Length: 287
Image (tube, rainbow, N blue to C red):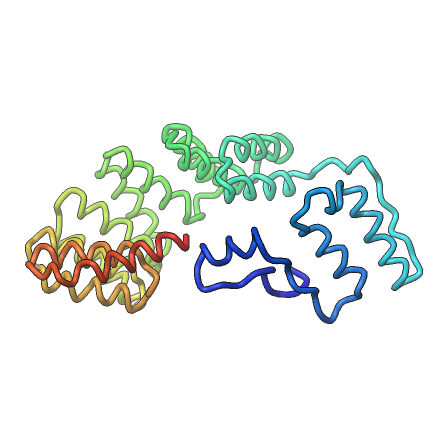
């Protein structure tokens, strides 16, 4: 973070991982030498040579701060109690790491401190969605709407939940409510288009994907959706065009490479399959 670059760069995940295991990072430039030394010590390959604790790290950083400013930062070993906003932030962090149950615990603490903040219920609903606990997600999204009926996201998320539950009519109802709130959100038309495709209402799906692309011409997911629909109705060349457009708009879109490989199999051009599957594997590995 201080340097603006990761400690190791490479052309592939495998190459970067190998450097993490075997190479020493280079000293950082344009910062005090003793700060660079501390950072490199934290990254030392030998556990015994690393800084052992946060208190030790704090002491070393205090020395540097004192050398620069002549002052010592007053700190407390016992942290101040977290605010509702901080519990919410901690929950978001756990969600990003995939620890959704821990995230829910944090959101509960935020809600206990500030029960009228709709964001906490929305985030908690998202955690339950990731855990496939759809009824709990629905409860929290509805609470979000009770607190703020003009907030767009809970309507979209309710549509996604009901779609996952196979209740497609209910899903479309919530996407329609979201569109009424914001008719210029491409993501809503994509979601509703996906739902129409699931129930084989392909003309309506195509129309929604096209609207999404009118709003956002570089929306790769909408291109993929159109390609999938055209595969379903047997128009493989049309599907090929949209898959290629998806890749043009997002060159690292693994799902589009997989879909394109499937189309080439369907139209008997198997010699092209390997090229696109290799691309899909490459970009899947980078995620």
